[in-house]
Length: 88
Image 1 (spheres, rainbow, N blue to C red):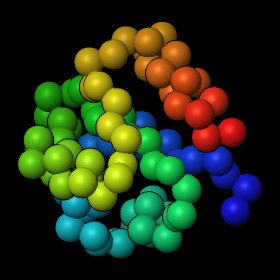
Image 2: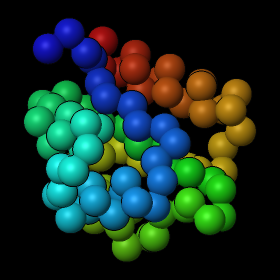
Image 3: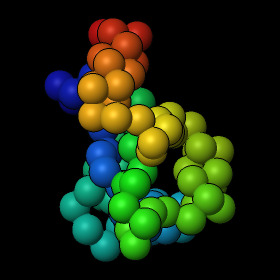
Image 4: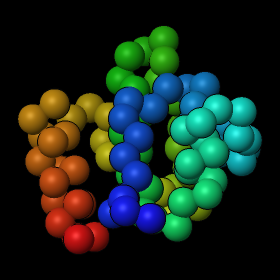
């Protein structure tokens, strides 16, 4: 209840696939399914862990804000700060 939003970064292929399916086999996915707060996701940019585009599109359709995985750490921090200000 005290969180303003849920930030998931970096999000691996396994995590995003489970989010897209609505699975809850780990703590983070349980939080994702239970929260009423906005969810922001930054996909992993590591090629072996990068989520599938279909899963990203499914997650977006659930209302999750997905940040460009190609952003540098500095630009990512700036983007998250902007999103955080929107919800606080």
